[in-house]
Amino acid sequence: MRGFGFAHHGGDEQLAFVDVPEPEPGPEEVRIRVRASAFNRLDRFTLEGIPGVPIVLPHVLGSDGSGTVDRVGSGITDLSVGAKVLINPGMWDGTCPACRSGNEALCRNYRILGEHVQGTVAPFVVVPRRNVHPLPERMTFLEGAAAPLVFLTSWRALATVGAVRPGDRVAIVGAGGGIPTAAVQVAKYLGATVAVVSRSPEKEERARSLGADAYLVYSDERPLDRLLWEWSGKSGVDVALDSVGHSTLGRVVRSLARGGRAVVIGASSGPSVELDVRTLFWRQASLRGSTMSSRGEFQEVYDRLASGQLRAVVDSAFEFERAPEAFRRFDAPDLFGKIVVHGPTG
Image (cartoon, rainbow, N blue to C red; front, side, top):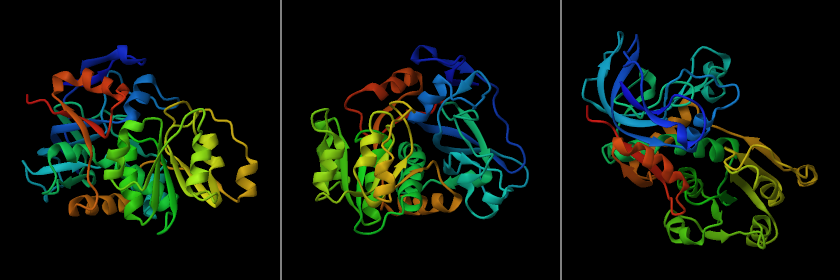
């Protein structure tokens, strides 16, 4: 089977179409014919190589996907071949204490499609039955591929880990990627007042169209902590969502209110950060990490996508043969939303 990924870790020069075994479903598994898949920043980290995450090479990228049921394993009687579906990209073992308590995101054997196992930028992907959900009628295959990972991550980070409540002041660091376009919507749904902070002034109109109440353009001369401090009436923000890491997190922490929460979901600018911890204890603030979601959180997101209360934002869509070009769009200054690849037709 021909998929898109890499045979060796490294930079974009290692991206390639690779041959991997065509997957077959085992008991309680479903094979999906992929109609659309989507890239995430996680794909770039996987390409570079993540310490402690061994993978089988060659490797197919892509965590998100939608398509049609192609084949089912033994024990599955409630899915029809040809049914339109989308995929929950997070997989858990279902047996550990975290899973039994309904907090699957803390499963010690948690895996993500396209990171720990072969991904979705290929003709077929096999996943457990519990990861397969009907594609909501209001969503296209492109939207079905664009939504899951970024909304799962944003929902858990804001609703559960960040404990956002109505009236909270929430800051979203970044404007154009899939996470910010999802996080703004989630924060507004939870009743927050939302500020997006970005280096790019060009994305303000689109961020406000998703519900952002303020759009703050930061620079070396106008650092983001100063902008957020002024925006918050010199009280600080209650919750700040940061996926940038090295270049922003120190100032994000300085922008927190008393009892504020900084939630880290990524490190696109680097994982090493210098912090003044006095801010944390004096303001009794906290620094929290978050990733993916539990099964219940996925259902919360799924229901709101199905009802139209949350909506996927597609930046661009590329044919399968143009997957290398699609991946490189991460570096485009006008990126806004998810990069989606049409599944191969063969």
